[in-house]
Length: 83
Image (cartoon, rainbow, N blue to C red):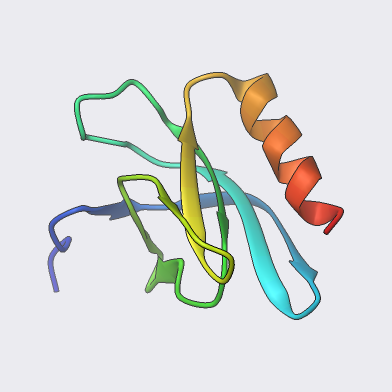
């Protein structure tokens, strides 16, 4: 199977679970005309076979947020870990 359109391989640095919802902090290549390479993702469907969406998705149950700045990405991950 190839890389589906709009997805990239995810490298997970840290993973936790909050109220049964997985939360991920990692990196990947975001090819959507953006230098963003770090992400915070949450929800059961946010990762699919090691792949992650290359665009921001934000809902209560599932999401992916891409960041350029490492400190901003880490701060967002810490924020989601506290919920």
